[in-house]
Structures are given as structure tokens and as C-alpha cells.
Image (cartoon, rainbow, N blue to C red; front, side, top):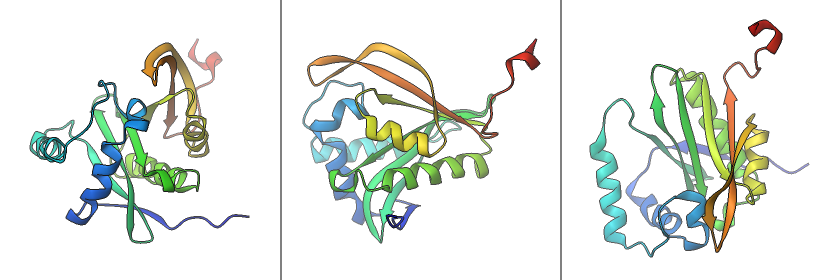
Length: 182
């Protein structure tokens, strides 16, 4: 049985910026992280985005973490687009290439879900994944997410249209019985 990686979520430090810039500027995975047109990312634009995010504040402000593996930053994870009335938010995670496929994402998304439910009092967390990113979908399923739907040919990814898979997890972990809703 493979050993569970020593993953934790923590606050960002200045030492993490090079790794986070590497992820943000990775054109190979751009479409999986952003609906914007892919383009080279300069350090100045990256720094400006960080400053803008820090200044935004407000009740819908993202809660962002660094994904840390044995003291080294290997990615980022966040909850964003909070709905304080319905008690839900969207989750996102991104990792450097050498951290993928090792259980790190599963551990990080599980911790993010726990934080959202326990510390933010969310009742539901949802996310989106490109259909061809089966490793991510599998990691989300291991963390308790279920596929709730699909947006057909919704994303343009590396020269072709792809489906977006919509996934969610409820704090209760169960769905109401349809017969009880009648």
C-alpha cells in the first residue's frame, strides 16, 4: 500500500511566489484552470493579479492556501464565489507537474473540503473539471465529490471542444430520498 503524502494547506509566503507563478503561467494546463484565452504570463501581470486579489476583500473573498508537501510549496487550493445565503462555494486546486498523480491532490482537496465544512460552515462545495482530466476527477471522487452534471463541449482545450464535468459534495454526504420530497 502506498504511503500517504505529508500534505498540508497553509498560508502563502513570499518564498512560494516562484512556484505559484510557474503554475499560473503553465500554458499546457491553462484551459483547465482558466476560461481566459491562453497567453504568456509575465511576472508583472502575475504580481498585479495577486495585489488585486489581496485588495478585493468583501464577503465573497476567496480563501486561498498553498499546498505544502514536506515543507515545499507544490500548488495552490482555494474556495471562492461564496454564497453566504445558500452556504456553498466553489473549490479549485492546481499543482506543479511533478506533484500530480501521487495522491497530493486528493489529500489537499480533502483538507480543503474539511476546512469549508468545519471552518466556513458551508453545506455544499462544488467544482468543475475538464472531462479529459480523469486523474483530477478520480481525486475529487476520492474526496467525496460526485458527478452532478456535464456541460457538453463547453470548453475549448488545446484545439478541441471538451465537456466540463460538474461535481459537488454535501456536508451531510448523502442526498435526500426523492420519495421524501413528494
